[in-house]
Length: 374
Image (spheres, rainbow, N blue to C red):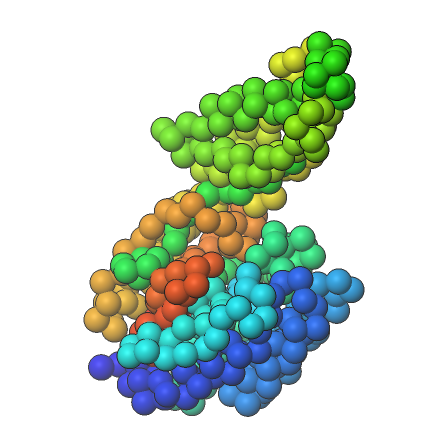
């Protein structure tokens, strides 16, 4: 057994205790006070384990972002994670059942940040000198699209030789994520003409009818052979059954594998024409996360990780996934990015969200070994 893995296994109970602390500091994205409190808990852990303090990046409406620097060097490694969750306070609670620990954001992705802290701590305690400084960027709004953090993520990535994202590993397999789909969100507002459904039906122009045509058109843009999906997730219209609907509204989710496909689909949705004469369409939105495409640099980084895995007795695999992360931004800048280095478990955004406790030390050792080799 490697000295890194041995050290981390010996401290697994302490790692889990740290996970419990941050999970109990619930942090739904929209609650700035709660996210900032969670950030304070993380700050105390960075100070306790690594002796470093945060550069706080203050935000007005979202939680503050936190930047930590460990070590020195002309080159830096960026470890990327987010503190916010999708769960309202009180919806889920922390609990342990056998080898599984449950709680809001425990998998997505508070355990990943804790593992990263302990990975660096293991190197520190064992006297393993890292060749590059390590920068941790802990953001507060990933779950809602990273509107306030994207600029800081991209600025930090451009100063980095590599980006390691501690989002959860692929469920069941533990695979690392070497590519992700890009993510877009569009809104369509449809305007028709209201009239009495009984007395003057012929004078109305139904926004709901137009909406039906638009839904069929938008959904038809899905092309599984290209990895492109369009999902009209929310559709609403009208206000009374005896009134020809004047207004309707659609919320549209887009996933794509290639930047060129993002541009094509964005153009098609933005320039959609009305089907019914007399209706108007207003479309807003864009592809807010570019696709994370697998490159030669990604392949080299993955092979380095597999060598670390071999040293630890892990047979690592890679995967392409449909969900986006902040790693999409860094990869799109051409910075070598490896994702899925966080906790193992299942159920992100689900009530059964959980981690596998016995894998906390193993995944932390993987990250520590990767940092050691860089």
